[in-house]
Length: 340
Image (cartoon, rainbow, N blue to C red; front, side, top):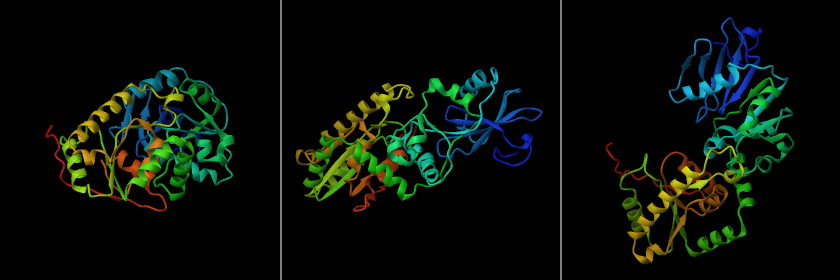
């Protein structure tokens, strides 16, 4: 199959593309028009699907890459009611998941900031902080993109692209951590400084509501605290954090799911505390239901962490690797999983 950015005639390269549902649909005007579609979640916006709208056939290379709901929405908005595009290229950035934002987008935006390429950049989400603070050199080209305005944005620009990356350089991480520190209130900073002064060593333990979680999570975490609870050791029990722009960005669907997860994590933390003797209970700090910038401040304190794999692991590692400290992760093979 031709690639969207290939050279040649209009038939073997894409001359227009559409942003829809965090994916880019690159159109090819062949005898039977078709679209190359990008994926998200860990694929650096790589091509993951070929869609033939006349026959409503989609060939996917990843089962989770695309579903019929997304294709139907694309059909109803752009295939059944085509329109004439404007001219020029735009970049569409933003993803509600914080770690996919820094895996996929922020390093690519940083590379763009070091070029002379003058392309307008629209963003749908800023979970790690304002992009104009993370990339002040791009501030004049950034504009918010409410979902209600996506169709008009597609009309204004003929070619939409998303930027992807495969690694997170230290410079990108330092930008995010710097902005997170600027966004934290003095009250939060004071609480974090006081907790750091109380202990010689601090252990971070992640708490996660059920689903992909060991069934003996509460008992396991309590035993870790008891086993590592030497004098001078403090503990952070970390539950749920929310995107920086959650309450100011209408593109997030709802905070009800997040509220339910926060409540479930709070119950798990209380259950862990109930299994601890009082002298250990007073050395535990609950970190749950706070913003990502505030959470990064707590993770900077960690000397060691015991953490679930996936997003939670990457999140605490991102915030905690300050120049003075690189924490050790403890991977302990003593978790019991429900057979179901």
